[in-house]
Image (cartoon, rainbow, N blue to C red; front, top):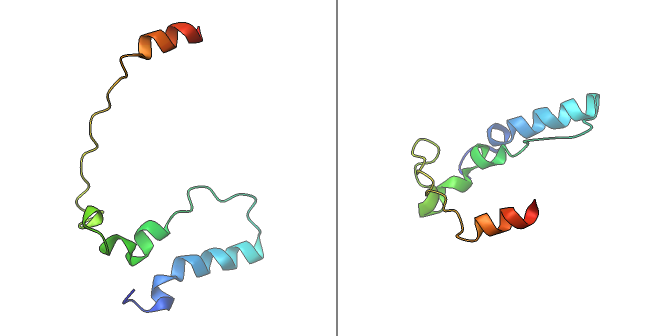
Length: 73
């Protein structure tokens, strides 16, 4: 949190001003705090993010999946 709060929170201030002028009915994908704040600098799993994004592990299909699908149809 070593940035000036006015700089760090500029996006939130802009959104607040826009909402006061024309209220939002819904805010989707409003999670900009993930990269707007310094939260990514406090844990080894997020070091280097977003430049160094680890590959997601491959998904495994449960051995019960065919049986689940058969019962669902």
